[in-house]
Every structure is written in C-alpha cells, then in structure tokens.
Length: 448
Ligand code: GUN
Ligand code: FE
Image 1: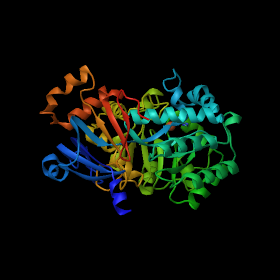
Image 2 (image 1 turned 120 degrees about the horizontal axis):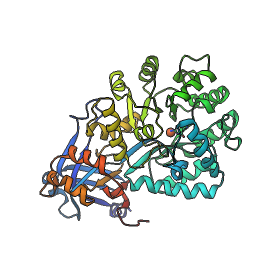
Image 3 (image 1 turned 90 degrees about the horizontal axis):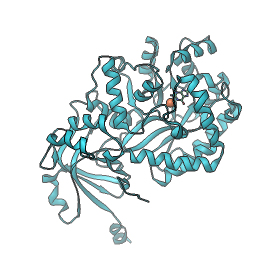
Image 4 (image 1 turned 45 degrees about the vertical axis):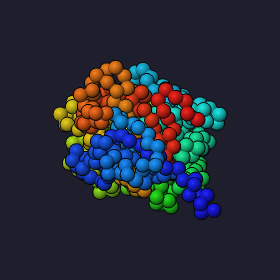
C-alpha cells in the first residue's frame, strides 16, 4: 500500500512574488522575507518548500507550475476579533456602542435561536471570510449553543483553523438572550469537549463584556478557564466612555475594568481583549505582565465613534497587538482595508504605521499571539498551507497605481503595493484563497 499512498500525494507548485515573516519579531519593517520571483510548494495540506524560482526550479521540473507572476502571495490573513451573527447588520446607521447594541445587535442575535438560520448565516460568514483572504478568525457567536455548533460545523467542512465561542451573558440584555452562570458554564464546557482541538478548531471562552455578566457568571467561566488551561478567552475591554463608567458603577470594588476580568482568572496568555481604547496605566502594565493580547479594531472604533487606539503606547509597553475587523461594528471583512483604517487612526495620533507592521499584525504577529506560529501566519515549510494570492492590478485604478512597482511580471516594491492595496482593496484584490492546500476561493468563480 506504500506505493498507493505515495501516489495520492498531491504536490502543487506556485510561481509568484512571496512575502511573509518567517520568525517572531518586534521589528517587522526589517525582519520580513521577500522573494521577488519565488516558488511555493505544497504537498497535501502542508507547505513543503519555499525559495527563489532559480534555486528551486530544477527540483520541480516535472511538475506543472501555476504561473502567478505579477501577483503577491502572503500568508492567510488572521482576523482576531469579529462577530459571526453580526454579518447581516454590518453598516447599520447611527448611535454609539450601548445604543447600537440595544437597537441593532441584540435583536439580530436573537434570530440565532433558529438553527436553520444560524446554519445559513454561518455559511455566508465563512464565504465572506475566505473571499476577503481571511483564513483564520477569532469569532464571537451568540448566546445559543446551537449557533456555535453551526459555525464550528461549517468551519470543519472547510478544514479551517477557526477559534470561536458561545457568548455568555446573564443580565442587561433581552431575556431571550440570557443564559445563567450554570448554563454558561455547562454549554461552554460541552462546546469545548465537542470542538476544542478537533481538527484545526479551537474554543474561546466568551463573556460578551463585563456589563452583561454577573460576578457569578464571571466566576463560573473563571473555573472553566482553570480547568482548561489551553482554551482561549475573548471579550471586550475599555471601548466606549459610557461603557467604562457603567462598569465602574457595576463593579465598584474593582480597581479597573481589566481588574474585573483579572479577579476571575480571565487575563492570561491566549486572552484577547477587543478595543482597549481608554486604558489606565495599570491596565497597560497588567496586559503586558499577563502576555495577553489587544485586538486593535480601527474600522469599528471609527464607525462607533469609540476613540483612537494608542498603538504607540502598546508598542512602548511591549504588548501583543493583533488587527481585527470587529464586524459588524467594523465596516468590512477585508483585512487589507482594516489595515488601511489602522493607518488612518495612527495618522490622527501622529504615529506612523508602516504596511509591513500592519501585515505582521494580521499574519505572523497574530499567530504568535495565539501560540499558533508553527501552523499558521507564515509561509514556512511544515506549516499548514493557508495562503492568499493578491492581484495588485485587480481594477483599472489599482493597475494604474501599481504599474511602476511591477517589473518583468514580478513585484519590485512589495511594501508600496501592500500599502496601495490597504487603501484600494476589495474582494477582487483577493485572486485566490487557499486553506490547508485547497483553493477555497477564486475571484469571479464559484468553487464548491
Ligand atoms: N461590546 C459588547 N458587545 C459588543 C459588540 O458586539 N461589538 C462591539 N464592538 N463592542 C461590544
Ligand atoms: Fe466586538
């Protein structure tokens, strides 16, 4: 049977410009790998070779080569904070966070009590991710256990590396969206047992945010966090000034917003906190000492008028930062556009954000923050073959803008191309998306 299994090995060879960060770094603007005329080789679900065309071609003479010259291959993009049930309410007019939650979010999330509905939206949601080049997401579901099951089921069919969790909330939201401390613990535990570590899936304990969880519920989730030290944790922190004042009133004994989560053992490596716009000094320090991660959600922060993230402060404190869309408060699934919004937020703060740092925060950097750099986030041999093929000339304007950056069908200035795409990108920019070696999306083509 040896010969048979060898025959089944599927080797694919791609020729394009290749850009990634092969190792963790605090200096992405210099520690990148760029191969102007490169070959990327996959076997089944893994990357097995990467190098320059000239160095590698002799080894792959007998293979058909996918000629993607003029295009740029980067690792599959990682969106470190977004909400699957909010897909349909993206771009809902007006209001700041707390009103937006009451007027749009809660009524929409209530629809997910219907399993068929959840299954339908899970499929649309994952299609939106892959057609925008996102191959891994850290995702909030709704309070309903069955909606999380629907999402995990859909992701497992794509063999996708997805982290998700059932939202837990037992107060300050409509009754039909409330669980309880015991139910939150039981359903979260059942979902961990069903999905955490199954294939490429992982679980994140997901208290929505401090105002919608009682102290008893946070304690119940803290117990689970202790019982399952390798599950992730995701929530929101310090997004909106009214929210922060509300937390102060609800939890008068706690020193800070972060301290509420900390008291219940929810602040650790693998905890990802969305937003973090108005932190006190002690909160910055605690995020650092815990090796926790901030999900920087620029498009959402502009959309809800929440504030401007201080990336420079995070850099000074040496805190892990990943980029995230926060759909449906974020206005696009496209992480390149999200990086463009991050640049604009940093401009308003007079902090530069170079495109390589932006790329790092949604590839290798985000993977490292999740402890997943040995499987995703880069183009290293031995990792899972999740990658994206970008077309710099996807429309008339982008072709005009990037034409001088392309020489003899290879890209001479990848940073410039990336930056231009961060402002101009849409779905047409994503020529192809590969998950575990399979092409799961090709522009203008229905793939099954
Ligand atoms: N804080 C609590 N819930 C949410 C949510 O769904 N979106 C955002 N942006 N912030 C939140
Ligand atoms: Fe969010």
